[in-house]
Length: 267
Length: 250
Image 1 (cartoon, chains in turn yellow, blue):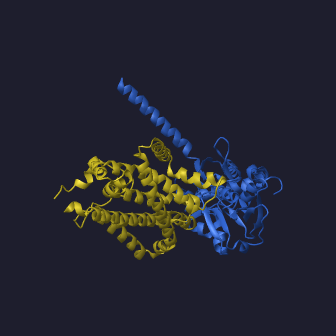
Image 2 (cartoon, rainbow over the protein chains, first blue to last red):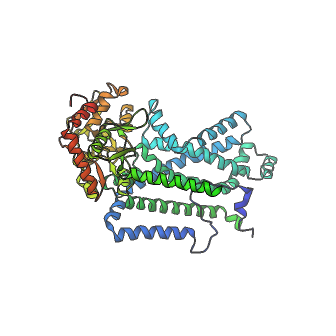
Image 3 (tube, rainbow over the protein chains, first blue to last red):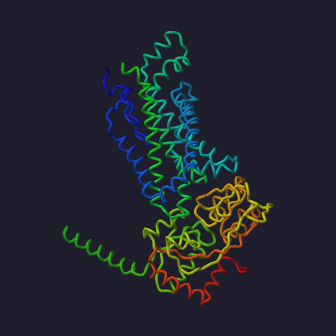
């Protein structure tokens, strides 16, 4: 039986992101921060809608298509950002000077520009050269932005795998490509998953920025509702609770995936 | 030594506080969303200017109080006046029954209709012609409300400010923009970058009236504003302001 914290301290990576905190998969107590937050948020939302259907239920019923758009943008961005992050991570540890420089420059440039500015840039500034819809711009901007952050996560995860593993693989006759994809990455994935999950949740929260491009996501639906009813407190309370419930559920999903991947560590 | 300095500082602080209070007694903070030319916009010195801005300054002068006009984003401008962050909203706010439930309004100070701007070379005859088209407007403005109410089956896009919507239409991602008639005329006739690119194609028949917005229950302020508005109208100052900002034709 290894130390409880063994897998987390692997490679001594300390990841600080603005994503929700992933619940520890080995947490067995019924009452913990995650369950208090989730039960509290769900109860609060239900109570508000039951006690004061006007306006809370009306607000809630106004939002579903916005939730759908938010999910659509998030899922599409994850599908683009994870491969981009993997490529960037591999590029950052590449021995090829040109590839390494390209990947590093990309990370430096993108991490230095706020996501909001990137969104404006792609949608309004670049519209001079090519035009894409609001949702496509959102997916491009978010993927490009988070690809850079995830690149760092992938790099750190790959570097954390002990050199002995790849040396052993190489001595068995695998080439560098096979070593990376059959030996190093499958192991690194376990270290990488929690921070990547965290980035995905942060991504979902950051989609609230896309309302500046007239994309009707949850946030824009809320603003549009407030624009007609002037119920600032009520609307933004509901919105905060919905975002909270979504991120809490997602962080639990990441936590479950993490515990599945850690299955063999428990033996 | 230290006591002397402390006392001096304290005295200075008191003086500033009293000084501020003396001024604050007659000074109201005014919020304008300066993205609505020529009604309210920012000049080269980043100061608010425009018809509504000049109008509220003239009203204040006539009714004997001072105003400090600040640029506040439209999205949230009503929340700020409801919580008392500022006293008056002078931002081309149409007096609507929904808004009157939550806020008090001064008497009307300007009359507008909704106008639909299209790219040059295109035309519509009624709102119904916008069926299936992408129509943009500023979030939470009466243009959006009119389109929703007409329910003609247009794809309505709500932007943070009307300038972004016009920009998006010139770029080709939107088919039409709906906004107040003076704003539409400004973009079509006065904005050099868009010269010849826009066409003010359609105006609604329903008239809307701008009023200054205050927090519910501030009848004292409404009275002061109404007194000022009456004087500005009677003194002929209003006609001058209209000529200054809308041009001599209207």
